[in-house]
Image (cartoon, rainbow, N blue to C red):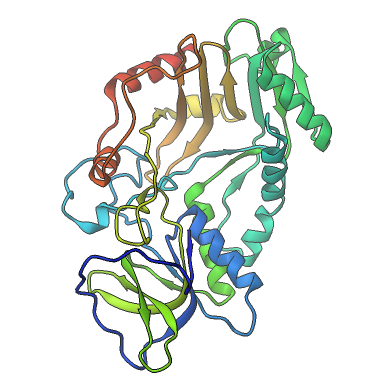
Length: 371
């Protein structure tokens, strides 16, 4: 959400934000949130800026002590009162599927354009961070189902090279995998696979810095609109970090994801209801990782389940893991399980700091073993 000087802000609660000094630096644009969206926004803003406009990107890097960082979502609550563990990123992970085909042709076109820019981002970062692994992608679904038929259509429309695999060919091509009866496959062998989400953020941030963006590695605590007493100009003050340092900006872009409402960053809270979801990581022995090394990223969907599976990926702690997400479906196509809605900021923090649902973990373990 972009705030500019004409934004009609609702009354803010009384604050102890420090006054800014006369020589305080004024940025043209401040971007709050240094994750997937914020880092990309900073890079693009720098590329289209003119007249030496000043841009700042504000947000904490992934802390090495973050309980969710190495495990990609499995944590504990040892540091519940530490502010550094009250902000999390879903990008603290090594595996995100990337592919060019989809049921939605607009989504497919945007994904294809993004994939074509991966190398550009690496080069703009100074070649410091590779984040893309081209291992191919496999879509599996019912032969007469929408997912496969619509993906075929978008593949033809966009001239994406795909192999159509019937049920027998699916078994021959991937003998180490077992899919539900009646399913066929669509195999993208090129320009698809997976990315390291944390690696992409590092590359985008480095590219933005190369283009002149200033990075402040702190949490943004709050945003307030101010009016200059000397000329009446409107601007924003952003309080950052444990020292409550205040910086100024003419415009503010809030890209804080699920944590947009966690602090007073916006004029009013967004009408968002966060939903609990989880993945399960399966640590592999070296021989299993070797056996599955040519596995593509996979999405499976039929009337009974949907799932996505990442191939073996080595994580920062040295383990090699398969990652699974998904759920079994009821007769109406809804996911099984208890109410997943969260209605407070603390619920979101508690969910990130938890080990997730044990029932869901067992269900997903059984699902992976079935594959």
